[in-house]
Image (cartoon, rainbow over all chains, first blue to last red; front, top):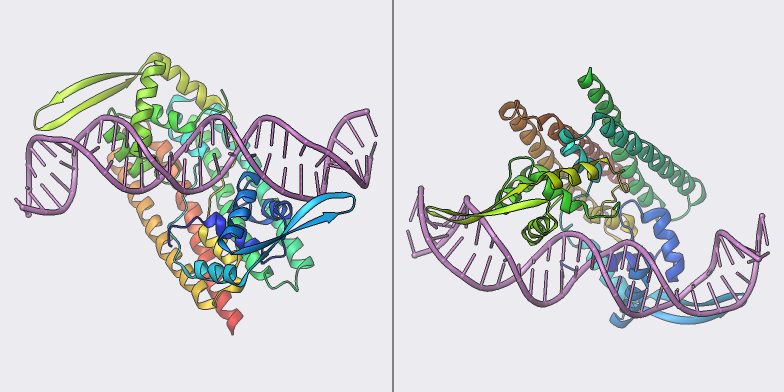
Length: 184
Length: 184
DNA sequence: TGAGGCATGTAAGAGGTTACATGATTTG
DNA sequence: CAAATCATGTAACCTCTTACATGCCTCA
């Protein structure tokens, strides 16, 4: 029970947010879940199948004009129950990110100082992009989805991303000048 | 070349820090690498074998008195070259942490507000523990390893952990009071 | 005498990515 | 005419975790 795969519940949860097809789910994930839970098509479609097998969702095949057929999924009462039960479960453990930059910095004694600085610059640029993206999404949610019941919670998760990204940005800048001083 | 597994290089890099056996490497990882690169025995031993096969390292089997036999590994010139080459390679991409708390908050509309607060409390407690651990390790490195050439870089990675953890702590506290206000 | 440290290793399986396959319609 | 969007899916592969197996020594 407590060791069940959260990705399954991510997909299940998305069925409550208006996503009905694997395709639209992927868009939602790339737009809003991406910063704390990436999911690929290779997981989405098999998982949707599994949810139906478990009785957590139902499918309906729909033919469309001018578009390919699609399968619309809907969460069942039983699925809703399972989702709520999972939401109550304590969080398994703190996430550990795999950070290639830190790994390289850890061994930076063997590295040209210039290279370390280049890595930091690249990283910083990406962090700034990420920060901008989060702000854009937050604005979009605040202005366009203000009547959506989910919106306040989505903004909370974005704030987490904004805060931790900003901290990483600050660290990047401080580390850059630290390395410069070190070289003298 | 650019898609090679960083874990392999983490192990290779550890050979330059005084770790010579799989066992001592695991201790080093749990103490100092853990916050940005977890590695289990199930990876360490097969990887060490691989490094020898590739000519990146050499092994020597040693019998010990009162202790089990051990295998001492040493990095080769060729391995050192490979490590440096990898250090030069640009970082593949920003890490994405899988965060179960954020996933649950994202769907919190379906949840008792009390449960969300409980999750935040648990999370906050663990973040504080983590922050303390990082500070302890940082102190240990600053005081006991001040003559070690690697030390300044290790401290840099710890600072990253301290900054981002502190940002998450702040977010936790702000989110908690936000949820309280919301309930009125 | 049992727990914990030292020390090495493997096999099964979970979880996930990537590349591929298919194919219609719309838009520049 | 090419590229993008809509739409579903699978197979191979990679990475990693977990549980297990072994065994000796030391210390409480």
